[in-house]
Image 1 (spheres, helix red, strand yellow):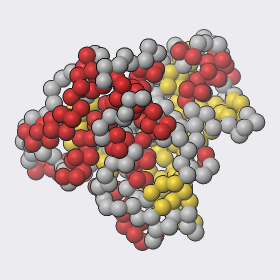
Image 2 (cartoon, helix red, strand yellow; image 1 turned 120 degrees about the horizontal axis):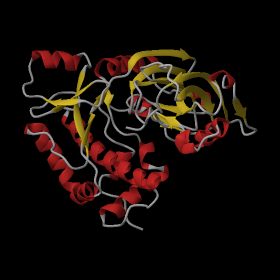
Image 3 (cartoon, helix red, strand yellow; image 1 turned 180 degrees about the vertical axis):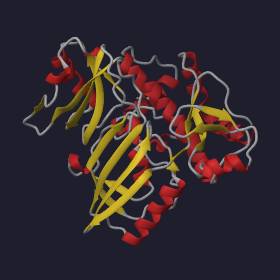
Image 4 (cartoon, helix red, strand yellow; image 1 turned 180 degrees about the horizontal axis):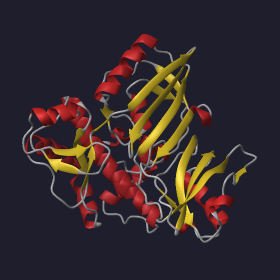
Length: 363
């Protein structure tokens, strides 16, 4: 079997930005310990083509949910739209669309299925909408997470949380992106060595996604080690918070630095593909890191992927914390594409986490 690619440890244990973990905690002991609610940023528009469904689920990931919804709608699974992937080991509320021709909106409310294994779903609302929901069409997600048996001093935890809310955290792709036991990284190494990607569209997408995520994490890890993950360097491509838009920082002046301090803009790292990277100091750092992955970058470009950018920093918004004994409940919002586990990793070491897709959505 082909070894994992260089830097594979960045998939699971990238460097922290705010110091060592303050202690350990049990994570996701039961699904209700990890609750996620999608925020679309828009309302149903009343159009005639589709229905926008709000669905609560537990014990099912998004791909497992879709066939159930398709059966009720009388459509093919490919006709069900959703904005992001949500974890099986969680209680989540997410939005989906179905063609309106199958059944009226009033017939959906309360529809669902409870299963003997404790998993299930129910439809909370259905509203007319004109378009199929597309992947990534999210403003963000609101998380409510219970960390159990936290063995850290509450005062230290609260001080660290204040820092995270003020400065943000490195916007790493979480280990979930790399598959169970990093199985996707084995496929990435085979792909980099000249192997053909899987024929299946979904599996091929996993390989491309894991490869780009690894390269991004490598660049971000270098910026963390240099202490520049939350600062702007000359030549930087700058992201507008909560969007996929970015611009070149021609001059890093007081206005731009103030926007950086407010969390309105962020430095960025690469989503590898065909296209130019940043210049100046930012470009030099990025090019030096990516030289170790030259073969993998070449394969991604040859596969027709275009380069993109992703913010190096994410700021947890409206961060709240409460204690009940040694159990800590956290609530915060993240922009689309960010991982709740990247926030938790800057606080404590997590134990007893089941494998899953603990992300806000696909980036």
